[in-house]
Amino acid sequence: MLKVISCNKNICTLQITDTTGSHQFPAMQRLNISKGHAFILVFSVTSKQSLEELKPIYNVIREVKATDSGYKEDAYFLHGRTLRIVTLMPYSCSPKKHLILLMTPPPLYTFA
Image (tube, rainbow, N blue to C red; front, side, top):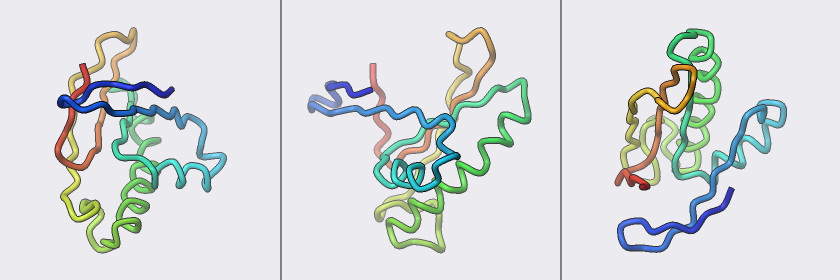
């Protein structure tokens, strides 16, 4: 999905890529990660397995972004800036309980 939005009085292009099942294509997964600026990892708070399934992709994101920025020794450092990890409230629009983990370099932008 590609959408043009207003962000802090600037026009931005927001591209959302659903990578569900991209583990079948590791090269494409790494390419999407290398181009991404923020990542939303969603899991069910009622299923520990769904959280466990996120760990490999979380580790790949850390690895790819650390490699891209040249800071292999510190996976929380991204393009010379500290990587912020923000945990958001459970997603109330879903019939199931989900928690969203948003990873983004600062500043953290919110989209209304």
